[in-house]
Image (tube, rainbow, N blue to C red; front, top):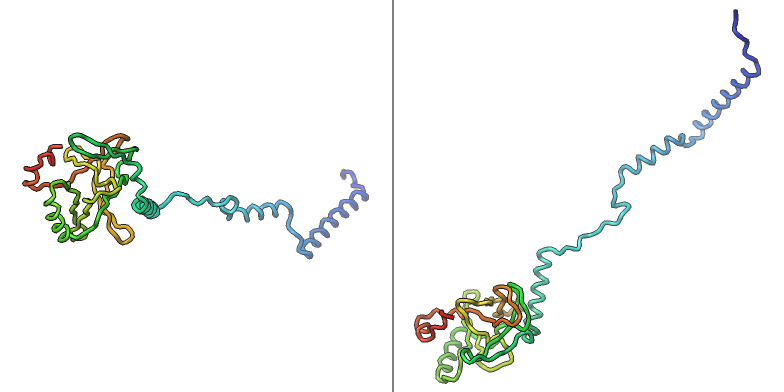
Length: 227
């Protein structure tokens, strides 16, 4: 027995729907219409896959300074401190019955920090020896001449004349110095400076080793190796 007959009306309706779909597809192909929605979404996803996060957020450049920048900054601060003599006001002059005048730290200093320049006349070795002979004729004059060698040449800073610069008044210690000398070149000229050998507390007396190891001088002034 044959199954029920499909009404012609319904058959014509299905045929019309199929024809309509076919026409829509053909029309889309002829007019280069955009692909279906789900395909467009995939294309957008693909275009985002090659993007970097820096395209959406600004790149933050590091504010850390390089070693060269830090060195240049340190040299600039040292140059300014030497030329301005700003650390002179951080040093206090005091008197001692045994040593005479001396210098105390008016503030604290960190290890390797610049403290003060040893200021005076920068002269060559030959002239220094001539002045030394002249000064020896006056027993009232103290010794304020600092001999050193720089770039294979002997130099001397003569700070014998009274001045406002306090580096010349810093006393000697062979056993417990808290300063050390260092030669630096600033603006084409060399300077003898004193830097902290260790952390220095406010109120401490500033001391450095004069470096005199001459046996005759030690015999005459044993404090050169005993203090």
